[in-house]
Image (cartoon, rainbow, N blue to C red):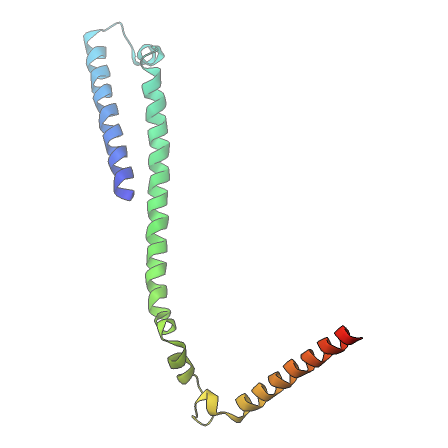
Length: 134
């Protein structure tokens, strides 16, 4: 997309440059004709407008290219930092730090937490049954 935009801008610039060369030749051939008079002609006005739009679009394109380059750089540096997140969950969990070096699943708190969660689910079921019956 970037190459297409730059190519289109270059082509438009070449067309406008050719028109400017024709204008310069016309001005040299017709001494009574001045640049302000030439720019006042109906055929020249669209070229002046096109030149202005091309300049504005070129500035916007250059800004977009700069922003894209910065984002590309940030993305590439972030990829290195996020490299550890690509591993499978089991591997990530195995790499978690533990006080005594045991795997997370072997920690006594995990078993206690699961028992509490089971009790909570049982209480929810009992409460739902009481509401339904009552």
